[in-house]
Amino acid sequence: MKHTPGNWVVSGYNINTSHGEICVAQVSNSSIHFDDNPEEVSANAKLIASAPDMFRALVDFIDEMEDQNINNPVFNYGLQCCLYNARKAIAKTGT
Image 1 (cartoon, rainbow, N blue to C red):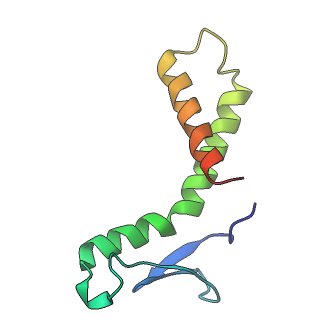
Image 2 (image 1 turned 120 degrees about the vertical axis):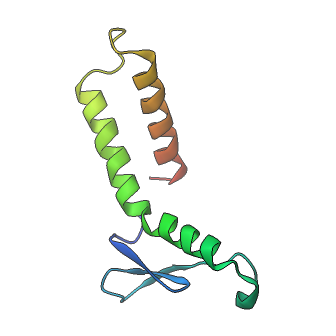
């Protein structure tokens, strides 16, 4: 794993590790904070803060589907599409 380990939490414009020792990111929808839409900034921060949990959930899903031999034609097309999309999302992380 190359990223800062989770859990991440939102603190204003910052996304910090749960103990607050590392600021993982700062969120703003403009270069000047007073122009920010607080609801949008909050939603973006929450999405970013949930990234480690979503990453782990996708990895667990992929592992489980591979254990279940998802490539077997017996599995439905929808599950195969979900697995493909999960692998694609993980690939975007560079992990």
